[in-house]
Amino acid sequence: MKRYKIGHETTYSFSGLVQLYPHTLRLRPREGHELRIESSRLDISPPATLRWHRDVEGNSVSIASFIDKVKRLRIYSEVLIQKYDLAPLDFLVADYAVDYPFHYLDEDRAVLAPYLNDACGADNVGLSDWINKLWRHEERIQTISLLLRLNHRIFQTIAYRKREEEGVQSAERTLYLGSGSCRDSANLFMASARRLGFAARFVSGYIYVNGMSMQAGSTHAWAEVFIPGAGWKGFDPTRGTIVGAEHIAVAVARLPESIPPIAGDFFGVPGSSMEVNVRVTDIT
Image (tube, rainbow, N blue to C red):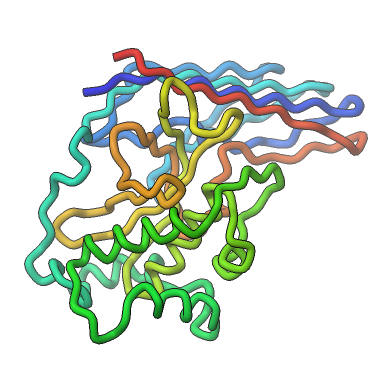
């Protein structure tokens, strides 16, 4: 078991006094048999009224509502967690899905349908050509081997580039540029996996690397694929690895743009800036 402390501070500075509308916060990690939360605290200035709920994906969401007009907003989350998935490759695949291609069972396919939809569209020639170089229809291959091949191919061919601007690049755009942020590589993996017939979803969270987050001042992103018998398994194309104890999932979604860590609006003088500081510390 590994223990981590996650500190995530976001500060907004405004040009003048503004009225804050409710802000949606996705900062609490997803709990389960692989992750347990020891403690958590959320400090917000100015003071806010919090309402907690689970969204349709089971993510923990907090809605912060404000009264006072402000020139600055600070949100600080600190969470202590335990991680138990120390052997991420120790899993079994259902007999019918060991080799690719395979077909999901009808009862599973009904639930997985939203994650099978190809958002890129069948006419995305660039993505299709790229996948055809990765796997050809006559090739018989183990399912996990194909997914690891896809993960490593993105790691090898897409250069990491930190992007401050909001949004996620399309899979075709990332292929064209040959570069992207972690969320762009995760989106390319997800689009490719869906094109191959896998159910895939986007994951936003944190990563521990040598005492600090992978990119200073940022969260991390990867993708998950539903493998029969094994469940949702994570793949990190930015690092070329399968997801393990150092990955801390906060939110999952069918579309990457639907789960930003913090989202909200304000009314008042135009102009604002944002500063984000993230630190993940091993306290085992």
